[in-house]
Image (cartoon, rainbow, N blue to C red):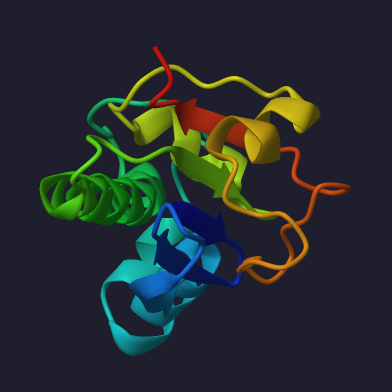
Length: 155
């Protein structure tokens, strides 16, 4: 499974044979934050005040952090839910989970699946799903796959 988190976040489930099984597209963390600030009258003034600990896990103690952490946690929860659903559908056990993209580091602290490994070569080689003749998620290739292999199904 590949979660590509940027302006938008895409989640794609890839079968062992390289076939695309489906996925989702949702706003990325910054787009979520901007949407809340633009579409709610009471949050924008409060957003300017408060700390800037958006990457810290845990409950927020001010409006700014509550918005930013909440958006990141929402994406992490979606990734975890999709991972769980993909694991239920997979006959070979839990899939690999690759989290990539420009905003991936904003979501990784909120994931409760496995432990990140940031080795650029381990990402594509570990799952083995992306040789040249198979599905390659947009922005992901053997040369630039470098964010985090969060869960590796290999023993």
